[in-house]
Image 1 (cartoon, rainbow, N blue to C red):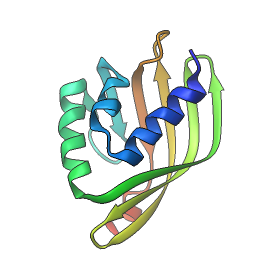
Image 2: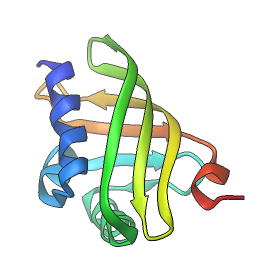
Image 3: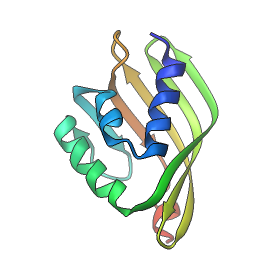
Image 4: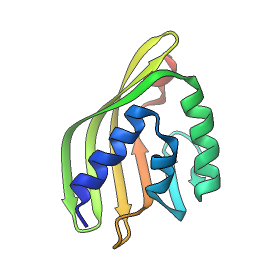
Length: 121
């Protein structure tokens, strides 16, 4: 498993708004947790979140990875996620932690960020 390539491909899929590639990266029982919000448990909840989230994005989500550490099946990165919204772009500092299965699927993804950056409050 090449975690570096998997993460790059995964973040590129967000930039393209490629919902199917994003979903295909997860295990069926994956947990996706944006820490200020409730977790999404399993692909059905992740799909529902993506439908809602990608619906407010007008152009793209760009992940600019600043630092990334890989330890076996765990990847941690510090990044700036730039979201193109109707009101204009929002640059969101994020720390993400990804857990992978041995076959390279994401089983858990946690993102830590300040919701105030996203909401403007």
